[in-house]
Length: 111
Length: 114
Image (cartoon, rainbow over all chains, first blue to last red; front, side):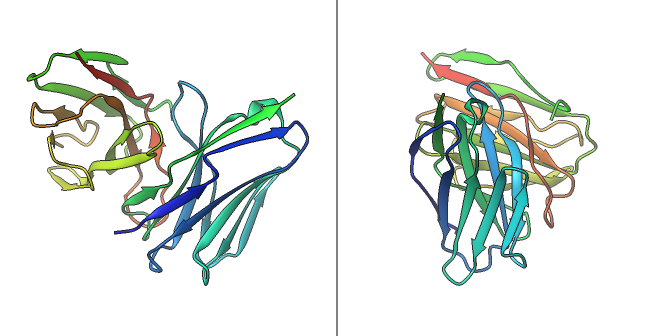
């Protein structure tokens, strides 16, 4: 099956700086890559996703890039704010059937 | 995401007992999923169902069972055969389970085995 690795496991940044979280996947058939944000004690929520036919997607301060050749994709958060503090999960799936999740990155934005 | 509910929020079980976790959705979604979340291990798929009366095992199905008698409901039973059941359990649903559907998660149930 698919194997998704996520780095780093913890990340601390100063407010206003950028944060980057990276994931790699093993199955070249994976073609859908969502990112979820999970605040403490709450459910994971989709924040952005990308399909394999697109190299980059941006939504305000959040962007995701995908390198199919290298089989890795990254989440970029610019101008970080304290409310960005949460655990972020990447995932990979083949046509949205089974999802394989990374182990999560705990992001702390220091005011 | 408010259309998916899980109950109870916290659950305590004695060793050797079976326990059933509830998951209900009113989003008219065909597909439903159960994940287990452990510290440092992300989310791992237990079972999923793309249609009523049908379900498939995920990566860690041993010691768990499910049923899908109604579109809205996908209960998970943690049996005594599950060797390490203490974890946070998340239910999710998506429109079809095919294509690029967004998964919507419930609030979760934290199970503790005493």
